[in-house]
Image (cartoon, rainbow, N blue to C red; front, side):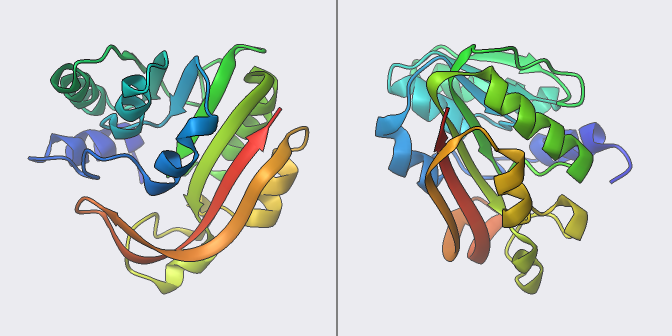
Length: 199
């Protein structure tokens, strides 16, 4: 992917909602455990951020695609909630320290060097007792044609993930196959890792 911003702007400029308007299943499942303020990494068109805002949480959604964030604000307006959006590349974005009650990473696939750095920053950026929520495709996803990156480098090895999140207590760390039905780009049997972790 030569220019990620151009790639995602193109995808999000297509009619409709690339991944639907409903929250990710795992986010819906763990939502009662989550507190604000919330930071959503690589949030795209805002479906998870808006869902959490509907639950009364203060939410900031970041993405490198301005087109995605336009749609996130549109969805927030339609649902009658307030959402803070910020165009940012995670290579440059500063997560802060002890700032967030929840950090969300749903299908936010990054090159290994950046993923490692971001995850280490996540540990510091959470408030004491704050939670990190992640769902990502694992390397086993290459056996399926149901969504996610086609490059092994962008998939998330569970063992590496555990090491990157050292300092958090895992309330859930599950490597599994499940049915994912999210818009046009995620549909069918998928190999994923799901994490709910607490600082």
